[in-house]
Amino acid sequence: MALQLPKFDRISFDDANPALVGAERGQKLMQQFMSYPLELQKQIVAARYAEPMAKQGLTKAIQENQWNPQIWQSEIGLRGAQSGLANSETSKNQFLVKNPQYISAPGMLIQQAMEQQARQQAAQQGQGQRQPQGQPQGQPPQGMGGEGQAPTAQGQGQPPSQGGQYSPNQYHPDVLAYNPPTLQSPTGNQNLDPFYYKTFGMQPIQQAQIDLAQNQAKIYQHENEDRNKVFANESVVANQSTIAAHKFLEALERSSALERGAIPGGFKALSDEAQNMDTYANQMATSGTQLFAGDKAIHDSFIDLQQSGKPGRKLNKAVAFDLAHDVIAKNDRMKERQQFYATGTDVLHLKPTILDAMWNKYETERPYIDSQTKMPNDSYAGTWKDYLNPEAVNAYKNGQDYNFPNQRQLKESNWNAKDLKEIKSWAHSNKLDPKMFTKENLYKTAQKRGMTLSQLKIELIKKGVL
Image 1 (cartoon, rainbow, N blue to C red):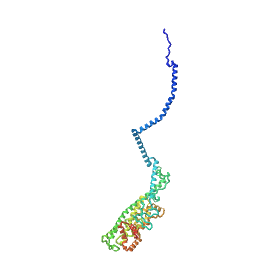
Image 2: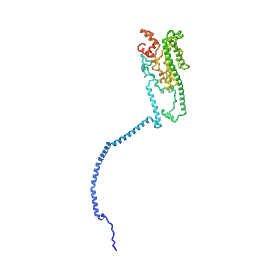
Image 3: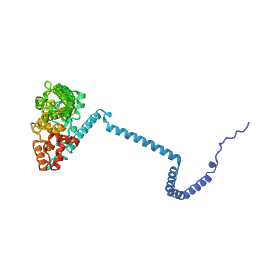
Image 4: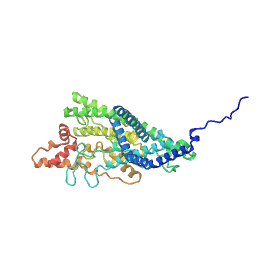
């Protein structure tokens, strides 16, 4: 029988030699312990140079980025895109600022308030630049003389009338054809009220007041439209009458005394001049009948003119001459009336009664003919605009009289009976024939020089004749 030996596991070298392993490990621990200060010193040195090396690396990276064309192109593209986006946003914001109604409903309110404020500022600026009375206070009108100086006639420096610069908001509400009632502001801001009413509506009583004012304005509008049509048609007739009057004067100048006067004028016209006088006198009479038919004459001076007679051969030359010029001056005033009412209704929107009152004031204060000389007051031509002056109209509404500062200068520019005597006296003192300075010759002189009679008077004043 075989002998069974005991089986032992193999052991490692370390287990077999524990003393030797212990000595080796102790030696390693001693070596590690001895080398620790050296490692620490290496780490300290490395930390000392780490920051400069990092800065150097950063500088190198920056330089590479600055001088890298690919990076340049990317940067340029990025900045261009950012600039385009900023410009687009700026344009959008600018548009929304100018047009806040596109932002929201409150933006619409802001827009309406801004527009209303702009209109008010424009009106105030226009009123500030305007001189309602023609000149600054204390100064004579431009081109006019002061005390002791020659006044300036129409067309030679006379201050222009300001009618074209007036606007309805300069007048008292009671003189306007459309005068809406004053309603209590629901928002506390009148500029925002229209949007409020549009959104929420009005109370019944407020709507009734608005409707009443609008209906009255429509009545005024229809009245003004009908009357303006009549005045426009009358202006056409007045032009025809003026042409006939000028042709009558030409025939009168060439006619013979044998076919003029109370007795010769009653016979049949033989010469061409006499026949022309009859023809054009009849044309003026026909025009007068058309102008004064019914109740079209709104001023007594027109009615007086109609009843005073007509130019014709039965009158002596001087009377026929005066009547013909009277017709011309009257026709010019008729055409002014059409312009006055058209401006007052279509531009300024004044009530018909206010326009009638101011026109009659113009007719009274600035008649188209001088009652003594029978010569036209042509310095007043075109000054009807002064009677649409808001200050004058508002003064009338308040029961006050408005005195125009240029009234005296204009009046002194026209011929009066004293002027005709003085010019004849001057002719005698200078040994000149007084017949050279008759009314007829004054007309001829003014026409030859391309002047009005008032402008001729100014020239004579400057030369010391008057």
